[in-house]
Amino acid sequence: MKDVALLNQIVRSLLAGQLKAAADPHRPRWHLAAPVGLLNDPNGFIEHDGRYHLFYQWNPLGCEHRNKGWGHVTSTDLLHWQHEPVALLPTETYESHGCYSGSAVSDEQGRLTLIYTGNVKYPDGSRTAYQCLARADGEGGFAKLGPVLDLPAGYSGHVRDPKVWHDGGQWLMVLGARTLDDKGEVLLYRGDTLDAWTLVGPIAGSGRGGLGDFGYMWECPDLFPLADRHVLISCPQGIAPRGEDYRNLYQCGWLAGSFDGMHFVHGAFHELDSGFEFYAPQTTQDSQGRRLLFGWLGLPEENEMSQPTIPYGWLHQMSCPRELFWQGDWLCQRPVAELAALKGEQTRFEGTLGEFPGLAIDSAWLDLALCGEGSLWFGAVAELCWQPGRLVLRRLNWQSGAWEERCCPWQGGGITVLCDRSSLECFVDGGRHTLSARYFPGPGPQLAPGKPVAGGKICLDHWPLAACLVQ
Ligand code: FRU
Image 1 (tube, protein in one colour):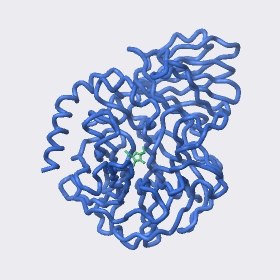
Image 2: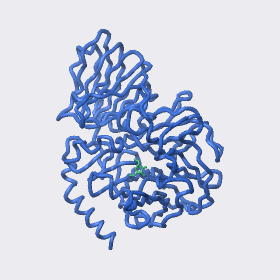
Image 3: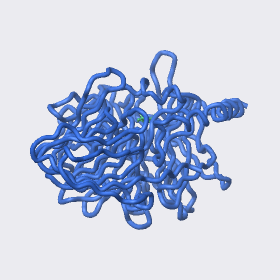
């Protein structure tokens, strides 16, 4: 009965809201966004039986961080997605305050199985968390199997976001955690089956592996092999800005090292994206052997609740699908090759900035070769500036009305910028760094030259990108 009441509300929310959301001029044309309501973390990213499955944290009833369940879309090409039945809704007492983030695996019998966090909040402000299972029911939905893991001793109620994989005949899981004395950690578990887990111990975190004080909570860990090394991606909270690093409220970064099934020996922490909005990414290895990643082009609790899409009844979008690879010992990202299929007719401009007439950039792929110093404006509310050794992305903060900037090193190599109405994703030096951001330009956003600076030459290849909405 509880389920029916919730479903009725969701149907009403979709009936009343979908046209309004679709009419928003800031709505992406080729990125994933929720039909109505709030979308946050990518969940359960997997290729299973020849289809890519992507789940997402979804509040179908509004733009606040409440009522979290899992939406579900599938695709064969990572571009054209089809809606599937809603995978999880918070209907049980062990998930009363949300079916939080988690992952998907093909179980021993090849059945698609979800492992997620049942989040429970109490009236006194405390909370607990259960790691829970749900299995494909053969009709496009998922049957809940209930909790398989409680909180470990010595940890707060903030233990969540299971990422599970199979290796060497056993299941392994990493969990994000906050200790009772407010240290962020990643916990490793192992299990012979998906419903019986043993704690191995913390494998990384604040005060560990040479990191020093490194935040009170680590969310959304993901540990995976890439070529001859392992990578741990995770989202530490509670790190103060240091110079040009850690400028966002919460961080998202990577550690590279070696993992022997018990211990992870790693090097320094590096931010995965140098822009404004990028958080809680999740990876999977597909049948071509590629390590693919989706991130959330959002950040919790900073200025999300004043985004101008909220009056249209929707909030946030995913990143484009990206592929991870190494350049030496540096983790790099590029848009997946499939994206090229959305490209329309190519145009090229080559010359000084002063000669650049500008260009419509509603949804576009731009390849930039830049010389000297200069800048390009994106719809008058964001500016990409290049200087020897450094790229800066400035934007108008929609909440404070102030200009703010993020930057990354630049070796003078090519830059790809993917634009989709209200998002920018810059891949710098062939993907060594990325700068991702939401921005909210006026109607018909134009790419325009900044103030001409001596030597500010550009070669710009432009392709419009076709819409590929969810069916
Ligand atoms: C990260 C996060 C996760 C949690 C989910 C809830 O953005 O806070 O730790 O599982 O969002 O929606």
